[in-house]
Length: 234
Image 1: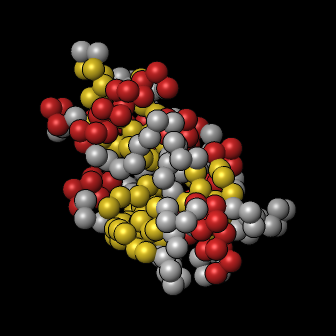
Image 2: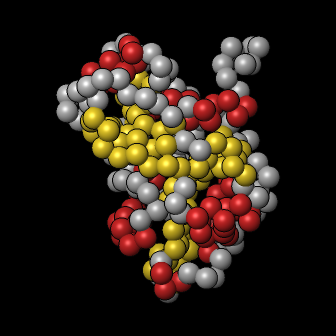
Image 3: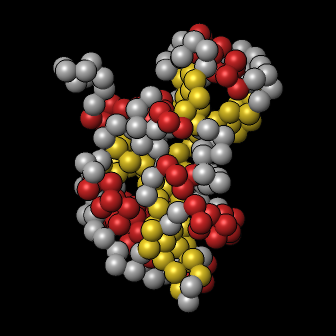
């Protein structure tokens, strides 16, 4: 805890990163339940919801009210839903700490913004790195590499718990793999995060062993093994 503010600092925020982001740097993208015990990202930015305390039944009730009956929500961590909630998807994941990663700019990388979203969505559709929506680009710095004018690789920032930045949407077109583009972009996004005082971290599917090996070779270390849960509200 910070003695001045009483808020979590350091890596503790990564225990509940969505909640930490939505009650911190990403508050402007948050919608809260009527009791203030649950929150979710604006639906066109990220699919994730969060509970202030996953063991508190009042937080689950607040999320059910926020989302509405019979709606799909996504949570991260190790929560156990109460009776009445339907589990749709359980995906084992890894959370990797990037404080030891060597961050450096990539001279060939270009900033990506709202005008690039159609190309970004096309690349995501081909490579499927994870959720990327119409306004996800607004959540942080996104960088891309172009070949003959075409976007062929990208990476950016998604969740922003205080003091941390989640690297996300790391993808490379199949025609341009094996050139180290993803690694250069990850280091460049990490450099942008560190310039404002944040430490990089990321999530990946545990089954995506190739990506996990790449990240570990860059200096990322396993911090915890959460799940990504797709649930339906009562």
